[in-house]
Amino acid sequence: MPIEKIEIGFEKYYKYDELIGVVRTRVEAYPNLAELKCIGESYEGRKIWLISPIRQLVQRWRNQHSGWTETFTQEKSPQV
Image (cartoon, rainbow, N blue to C red; front, side, top):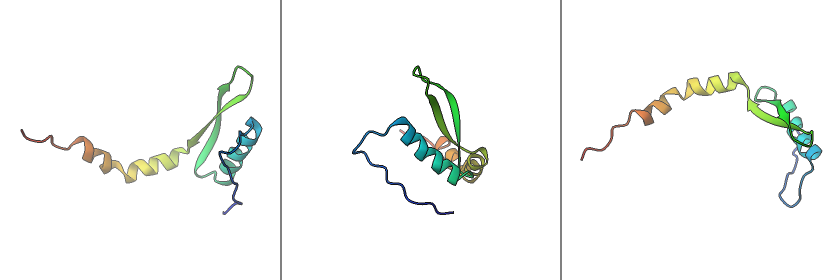
């Protein structure tokens, strides 16, 4: 489901509500990729948000790449 492109640049400072609005829009547009969780509050009383991949996506990636990590851990050290 394509959504409209939102330009985000570094030429200005985004207010909290603007930035959270952009993030929330993306997470709502792609619920099968990520979730948005509140993990606490700042000392100013604003929510601290965490964007995390959904568990099914992480598990699928681990299943597809399980041999990849084993390759690096089982490499032989050079013989001297």
